[in-house]
Image (cartoon, rainbow, N blue to C red; front, side, top):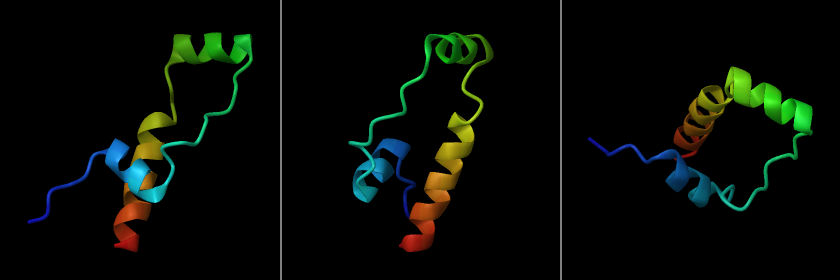
Length: 55
């Protein structure tokens, strides 16, 4: 069975490791800190699926 690559490896392979995140306004940053990043887990899941479909 093939070992699963971690998200950082996948981002590097796909060339996404140098992509800068969008800049947040101070209000958005504060909101994200209070509520947490609702999209981080979803993003990683989608990125992994995208990578695995391409192999």
